[in-house]
Length: 364
Ligand code: M6R
Image (cartoon, rainbow, N blue to C red; front, side):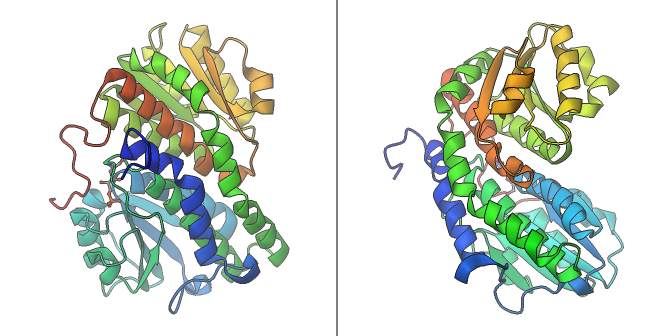
């Protein structure tokens, strides 16, 4: 049932405020001053390093979470693609927490990576959407993301629910390790409570996003740029566009632009810049200006004050609500998803069942 939407993907994008609200309710019970995990939970004060393993969009959720765990909890983090990790024989120290992220819980490479860590890691934890799945069953602790069934092959609501659970975990880690005090944690959690409203604000920009997507749908190649915790979102935006519209897209860290990809820029190249007005905004804007100086067509995704400051010379702007800096990757996921969605609809591709792809990759 598509609930009045043309595609499951559109329905699943629209559901994000609600399902994220549910994820928050599950992990922040009773007033929500602290993160409560099921079962025996995790004691991050005993953990020396975190190894996160996943594929595809779930891998990009892990890459984003690396910024959070390192910054908030001062925990060393390694993130790897499951199909690389499992064959590399990485040394797993007894103080390692091994964390596997998978919507389906059935991805063959992620499951194999989990099995590789059995008997080596201090604890095996999974962040999954399907509680009965193999990955959930084989973990010491399975943390559901509460996204509800996801049918579209392009993962959308599972991604933002993964991010929501991972950010709560990073805050739990900060509490256990004493790297943030109780007031700071309470402030961050209160900001997270505002996520459903912020996501609604992002969804309200659908028309603006559709207009920008029209331009993307005519392009042969598209670049996505982001800095800091917006860098993994640039990768995710490019993956979404490739998957369902078949337009070649690449995500780059803004600072890497001049180390190669700037050679691609000309008047035919749309460049989507994910730039909330945070501490790194000015740096990203200067990369964006380098693109415009070479006639690249910039789509700037920022908040009111960022757009006021930097809109000059852009091809299009997409206005996001102003949010707590930690929440930006979750809120800006909405325009990343909708850009891909509308570009695919404009091209007339099969949005929910893109060619050559399966929802759950159970072969290696
Ligand atoms: O079920 P999983 O989260 O383990 O799946 C991982 C990837 O196969 C998945 O995220 C894939 O990249 C999606 N099609 C992305 O939209």
